[in-house]
Length: 261
Ligand SMILES: Nc1ncnc2c1ncn2[C@@H]1O[C@H](COP(=O)(O)OP(=O)(O)OP(=O)(O)O)[C@@H](O)[C@H]1O
Image (tube, rainbow, N blue to C red; front, side):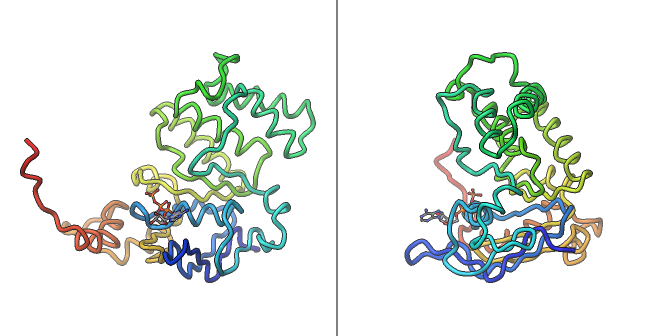
């Protein structure tokens, strides 16, 4: 089966600084893929390259067998993305924005209207139809960005921190929506620092640090390489800390801030 996402030697430099270096990944269709790493590891930079928002310095990206550089429009039709900065149009209402996005993807007017109504209700954004996006709270903007990312029924969904800033009820709704998409055959690639949610949702995990891929595999494969003090199954948090934590505590040795209280 054609993989959903393949990267070969994916690298991005900003001047002299290398944010992402030689990342080789393969994501199979139907996988719920968690892309993890400490702050500044290179997750958002990678997602931006995978979704055509940032050009790689070198390396290759294939999405559903298509070369992302050679066929950017075909790729964009098949994917949905919630990027780090959301990139919404603040002077529109939520409904106006979703209608705009639906039409941009070539959905006809009736289908766009129907999906806009369904998505606004699903995301609990329907009660203030006149409110402009600029006056939405951060969590409301996040939910609208998610609605816009799925309006065309993408085969692959890329989400940069989808749970950041959304309340517990919305997070529950969102998890149900994502699991439903997976059950219907979509692929989801997400970054999140909320490891309990990643552990519950994701079937596969990659961990990067300082721009390098450190480990990847199914959760059980990652667990097999980690010992816990109690000998019990490692949690994703324990795996994460064992895989990347030691390097970061070596960077900044734990010390007390004695002037704090
Ligand atoms: N436009 C840019 N110019 C210069 N450096 C950049 C730029 N974008 C990102 N970087 C650097 O690349 C590195 C990776 O950043 P990135 O945003 O990909 O990290 P991240 O893993 O998403 O982090 P976080 O979890 O904190 O969001 C960081 O050191 C960041 O400062």
